[in-house]
Amino acid sequence: PADKSNSCALPLRSRRGLILDVDTGAPVNGGTVFLVGESWAKFDLGTDGKFEFVNLLPGRYELEVQGLGYPTFRRPLVIDEEDVNLELKTN
Image (tube, rainbow, N blue to C red):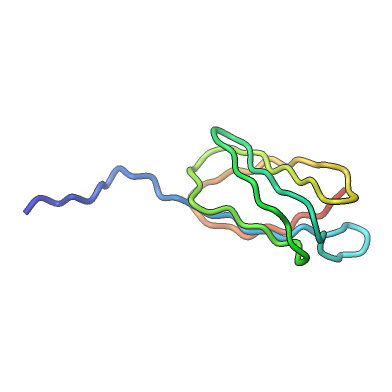
């Protein structure tokens, strides 16, 4: 039988993170995190400040954080060969 596996498929990656207040170290407990690049995705922050994006293609993205009561900020993010956990602090 023929091998139907696709050896050319790009592996999908994930990024998990935590948004913290830079002054207090407490989780930002509300808002939205956007991942913007060739495509985009959003994740609504809960009370724990955690976010997760899964099934991402490799490439360059920007992570935009709109925390309730905080200024919006962006950070460049490269999705490459490994899954990564992030810890971001608001500025």
